[in-house]
Each structure stands twice: as structure tokens, then as C-alpha cells.
Amino acid sequence: MTDLNNYFNLGLESTNSPIENAGMINVFRTPVDTSSDNLNRVTFKFPKTGLLTADSMITLQFVNNGAASAGSNITLNLANGAIGAIKRTRILVDNKALVDLQRPGLAEVVKLYSRNTQVELAENEYAMLGNQFRTTVEENGEEALDTTEMRFFNGDAAAVGFNRDIISPTVANNKVYGIKLKHLGADFLEAASLPVFLLGHREIVLELEFHSDCREYCVNPNGGGGPAAGDVSIQYAKMELVSTHIMLPPQVEESELMAMAKAPVQYPLLDTYVVKGVVDTNGIALGADQVQSYRINAQNREVHNLLITAVDTTPAEFRTIANQRSNSLGGDKLQLKVNGQNLFDKPVQDQSLIYQLTTYSEDGRTLKVPFNAFRCDSKSLANYRQSTNPLYLDYRGGFHYIKVDFSNANSGVFGSGTLMKTATEIEHTLTPATATNPNQSATRDVFFYLTISKLLAIGASQINISY
Image 1 (spheres, rainbow, N blue to C red):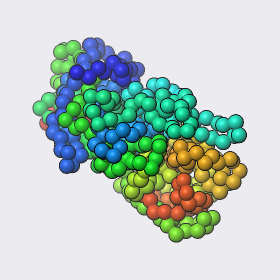
Image 2: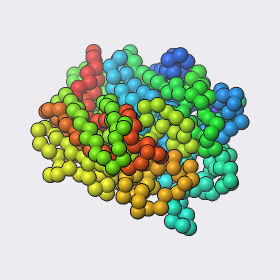
Image 3: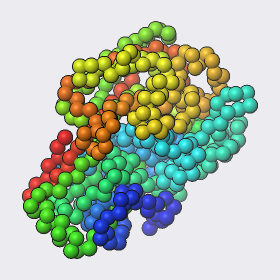
Image 4: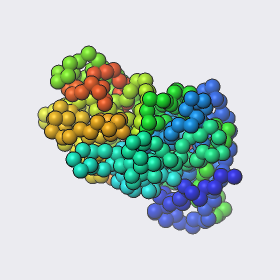
């Protein structure tokens, strides 16, 4: 039996506001309901008991399949760890999509590194997610990955390798990781626990789809020897849903069920979904401007923020953060037209202001990543010393997340965002500055993460989800 004490923390963020007549807390360990190695997919059915809390999570374990790399230093990426393995998350309530989020790890990087410092992540999230990202400044002023202070690294500058959490061919030797639902798109559980006891005979299902190419989420700091696409896989049959539930006294549940028979129970929440695009700077000369224009139709929904990420279309061999990266494509100039009016008086083009946009969207919390991890334009490359260490070059320009805030001074789920009555127009001007680490003259996928207001209404005979 897996020992959960190593990484399970009963924080119960959703109980910061005390629940009247709350009873004890139960933890249920639910095995996989269905799984498919061919589809890289598993499903779980939630226990319909009490209130589902934010500490509910899934556990998973990896195994090394590659004969050539069986003795190598393959482990999870150092940006978001085990979250990066998940390609899509769906939570279905009575077969209606409550959550449907693709590549949740990219959006979660912003939350992880705005709410925590690198040291806090290394200490608090290491046991659960496996991420270990810490940097330092060398005596000559160059930035570098801190190979002496990180648990993963052996500290040998001549041949840097991992000495912990290596994914081996023997499953029993590999670590069991835990990913909370709040990292998979269900962060609304931090605000209020979900009353699953009201569902009765109706099912609530968690469906997870994983990347088939392990280079999306696995790394080898030595480089030059893998991993290959199929070197690492996930043990689907051994996964578990570990859900925490606040138990309510029988008389409280009975009164709530009687009230639901008269009027549906309303559960407002913030949800995130993805709109896909393409950015094509292939063949654009370094220093030349390339204008990318997009139109996103939010279908009259209330939008709170928009996250823009540029991701490699095909994962390659990386040493630190794998393909869990949002690539800097050089200099930025950004303008949005919302409901027919320009969002900014003039296009935002200073990199410090671009960075500050993300800070505004995170309630004043800054993205705590190295300077060159976010900024990789002609000025930063020319004015700041650039190390030639491959570990540094691997994450340079890989944390260029742009998040635009649409919220107002109001509070709550509804009424605090912007109702998108027309399609939002985005004009993003890019100026490539380098062809290596990262290659800024290439075609990449662009993911637009929209956070919107959503209402789940649980009635006695039906469930409705509206916007």
C-alpha cells in the first residue's frame, strides 16, 4: 500500500470559511474505473459523500521502458513536475462537462511561480509534484541553475546528473506522485467545497488523458542520450483517486436535500478553457517585426483573464523543463480590442510592462522566475551576460507567460469580469532576437487560456451548467 504521508497535506483550503454543523473528514482511495493504454486515458468515479474539498488528488507512478536509457538520469521536468504529463482533464457531472481543460500544466506554472518562490516550491512541492527549479548567480554575474542546492542534482559540475527521483525500469523503485485537483483545472474547490452528496444517483467522473510522448514532461540533464518518445510511460492501473470529503450530519444533509427539491442549489465557479492558435515566425529575419492577429469569440461569456502561451509543436530533447514551456519569441508589442474598444491607449511593448500585466492578473503577485527565463529579446541578450551552460540555455526564454486581466473592482464570480459581447481581437507583434535557445524563428502552437464565470445548478431532477 502506498504511504501517502510523504506528500499528502490535509490543508483543506476550502474550509477557510467554517461550515456550519460540519462533521468529520473522510479520505477515500478510489481505484481506476476504466483505463486504456492505447488511448492514454483513465477515468475515476468520485464517491458521492459529503463535500468534496480542494485537497483531493490523483496519484501516479512512472516507469522507464527504454533499454538504451535504462541507467540514465531521466526524471520529471523541473518546471511543474508530474502535472506536465497530463494532456487533458475533464470532470463530468451527470455527463455534462464541469471542467474541460487541455494542458493544465502550462496554466498551473503561472500559479505555482506567482504564489511561491523557487525555494518554497523546492521545499513544499518537491515531495508531491517532483519539481525542483532553483537558480543562482555566478561570480562573473552569469545566471545558472543551482546544481549544489537542488535535491535532484549530484552537484558534480563536470557531469551533472540526477541522484534522486530517477525514473527506473523497476516500478517498485519509482516515486509515487500526487497531483491535487486544484492543479488540474478544479481550482474553484479552493473557494468552496463541492456538495457531491446532492448528486444522488447521478455520477461525477474524472477523466484524464496523458501525453503519449514522454519528452513532453521528462528530462535528462546530461543530454545527447534521450529520452526517446516512448522511454517513459505511466502505470495507469496503479493510479488512485484520493479524495477528501467533509462529512455532514444526517439531519443537515436531509434538510439540504429537501431544500433542493424546492429550488436548485447554485454553485458559482471560475472555469478555464483553451482556444488554440498558431504563431508563425518561420523564416522571419532576426530583428524584423512579425504581426500576429487573432480573433477569439468568448460567446457572450464573462471573462476574467486571458493567458497567452507559445509552445513547441513537437517536443524535443530538453535538459530541465521539457516542453512545459511558454517560449519567448523575442520582443513583444501587444494590443487587444475588447467589445470594440482598444484595451490599452497604445500598444504595450516594454518588456517590464508585459511582465507587469501578468502580475495584475495574479492579484499583485509577480511571476518569480529568473530574469532571462521570461525575457529573451535583443536588449536583454545584449546587455546581460549569457551563460553557455546547457542547463541555463535550456530554460532561457521558457517562462514567457503573458496574462491579461479583465476583472474590475467588484467581487464574486459573476459581475467581477468583462462580458465579451463581441469577438476579442489580439494583435501581437513579435521581433525575433535569437535562433537558438530558444529558436524564435519557428512555427509554434499558441494556447489562449480564458478564465470565465460559470454556474452549476444541481436540482432534484436535473443538473444545469450555464455561463
